[in-house]
Amino acid sequence: MSDLFDTIPQGQQSPSAQRPLADRLRPKTLREVIGQRQVLAPDGPLGAMVASSSLSSLILWGPPGVGKTTIARLLAAQTDLVFVQISAIFTGVPELRKVFETAKLRLKSAQGTLLFVDEIHRFNKAQQDGFLPYMEDGTILLVGATTENPSFELNAALLSRASVIVLERLSLIDLELMAQRAERELDRPLPLDGPAREALLDMADGDGRSALNLIEQVMSWTLPEPLDREQLAKRLMRRAAKYDKSGEEHYNLISALHKSVRGSDPDAALYWFARMLEGGEDPRFLARRITRMAVEDIGLADPQAQGYCLEAWQTYERLGSPEGELALAQALVYLALAPKSNAIYKAYKAARLAARETGSLMPPKHILNAPTGMMKEIGYGSGYDYDHDAE
Image (cartoon, rainbow, N blue to C red):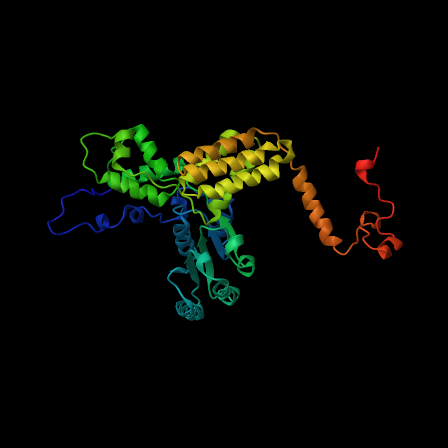
């Protein structure tokens, strides 16, 4: 390997040094991709497609920084397709038409096109439908990337013509391999001790791009000796939790919170509660959801649970954050430890179903009022026994 730190003539800079580390370390083959073995291995869905040269349209679903763009680019290279990349954020109908027209011209010359659409969920339903004829006639092989659940955000017609591939957040082991690759590229070790190195990778939160950006930042520092965890924390701002209050992660965490309470696990409930607050969730939303848990999952097994939750909600309204959040946490633990019953929830649900199915059914005559003589004559109230007088 050539020395990356050879003296460079004044006024000039190595072209490699001008490129971000993430770009310099971009894999050149699928084998070089770190992580995602569950889909890239020979017996994985993508590995099998490449091996059999039978690549189909794909939707790559996963969090940011896990290799969606890289994998799409490498698939194009390994299948001799022209790689075209667009973003749904910046692309409208006129631009799409041009992409399709150019792809048609390529196809006439026996050259296929792999169209990579980043953030494909940002296209509306009509725009998504626009891909269908070009997918069906082979003009394009579509590879869409999304961080959102495709079953919620993409048309059923589009999903029926593409395979959904789930990509996972990178593990600490994956990020460590990435750090070692960066050290080889830069020809020097990270100036961190063991705990600080682990803390740095943990800050990336499974995002490979973020990990490389953090590594590049740390490598730019001039340090007399390696930093420890505390010194690193002072130099780097803590990254915000990956939490989208309007996205799928919102529903994932509230589901985890509710199921932890239902499963009588107070520790897990507090953890998911804290995760949502750290991500910026509105405590009032959590107060409403906690009260709902008391109604649905505690019920008459502990009639005081609803009142406890309402009092905690009121306490939060008076104290505000962060002190009022403790009242909500106490209510959450109370529910997790309380006896559980969904009998009323199930009975009410069954009653609603029966009401819908028998909406025109008259009540029995013996429990109907008979305010007029005519009503008495036709049997209204006949045979009714006043229960308080019953022996």
